[in-house]
Image 1 (cartoon, rainbow, N blue to C red):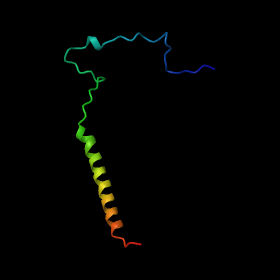
Image 2 (tube, rainbow, N blue to C red):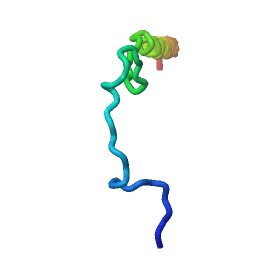
Image 3 (cartoon, one colour):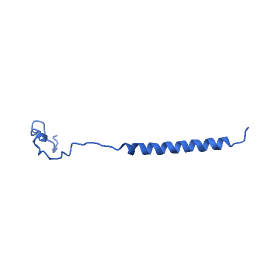
Image 4 (cartoon, rainbow, N blue to C red):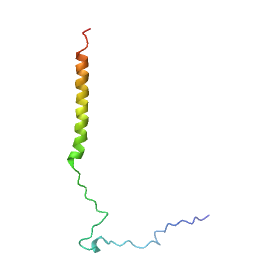
Length: 70
């Protein structure tokens, strides 16, 4: 039983031509990604989580210190 698939066999496929070097000098290649991340975007959530943890520890310490001595 032969399957009728839309895929081409490697021997039937056309050759891949490198067109990156043939582009116009001011052409923007959509595959080329330059990632520039702002460090504050990562540091701000970390600082908020640290602040919340420290506030929870301070509150717990205060409540535990206020308990009557056993």
